[in-house]
Image 1 (cartoon, helix red, strand yellow):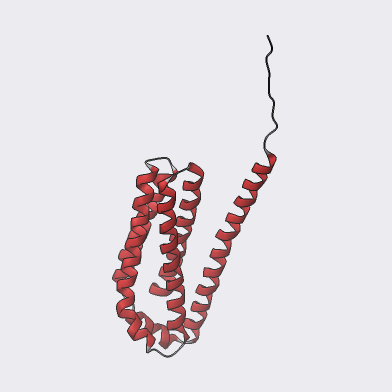
Image 2 (tube, rainbow, N blue to C red; image 1 turned 60 degrees about the vertical axis):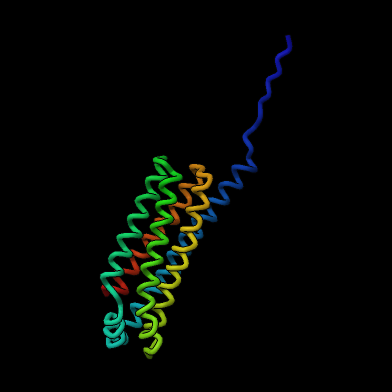
Length: 183
């Protein structure tokens, strides 16, 4: 009786590729934090240099709506966290994405009355506000789409990756809120 035993070495090319992708992912995460940090730092500097501009900007921002948007985004983050723990990942990723789209809807409502006034405002602070919040809005919209894409076929590694990016977006918003809205 012949018994064939096949011993294979681990696929080092695949593990090296996965390690490279993970490194690339963390470079992306940290670069996002650096970009938003630089933008928020510039905002704080401009606000310190022109106190009347920050006062005028705060007069136009809808703080209660920003509070509801924050609660919506953080709730969606809870759904993404549940998905990473294996609790109905498809359902929770879809709910997280819907929370992201709801956040975007709330921001569009805020932009609808902020934009006409801010467009007529002199100075760079209003422009920087729109850049920061608009850039964050684009991130929320894009990653909410990624959440739906991953929910279609939720592999644990992909769920964890997209949830990490989603939590990064939550973190960025939690930095934007006090600097711009409460500062």
